[in-house]
Image (cartoon, rainbow, N blue to C red; front, side, top):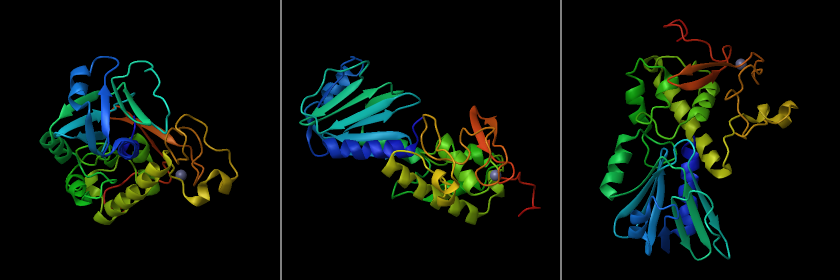
Length: 278
Ligand SMILES: [Zn+2]
């Protein structure tokens, strides 16, 4: 599933392609035809993301709300001389001179009011990519919860935009066992993790991939082959089950928590034992 950096980048791309311009909107597949007609011929005021939600506001206070879900995509093309015929199930197509964007497979695509958008954003936890984010909003939930930190990080009402990759990687980078109860964290640990997510995710927006290894653990620095799977970026533990930890050589472990795979190194991220290790 796309994580917050993908949505943030998408909002920037939409803003660049269509911001301030009159946009033609259509639904080649037909499922979004009536709503597309309402924004057709109006200008895009601004596009933004909040966690895994995308909002594109058009004139007349019409806000396009998209959640890509597991398989959705919103492909933005700029610098085109001609707009090609739609391929596949295009739910929404936006065009303006020299640019077009196709939305496919999203679990959610709706037109909402600005008030509704604000309600949705207000129910989300802070998003490390938003300048208005308050990490203490997440800390209030984490510090009172007996749920594992690995579960809390993925709860969009606690923290918005974090998916399985950033979850696994930020826990590794902070040597924290994923099953450690939220209320056992110290505030300094949370602040450090938050700052790290802000930096990692901003880098993700810039590069389009999730790279989390420190300079001393890159393929070049370690003389190892680069990661080879569809995920792309260089990571410590995500989907590295059974492979040696880049730091200590211990085999990476996995376990399912709330339906999603956790990945961690049992040596670098020792299990939390009451107050003994505090
Ligand atoms: Zn390790």
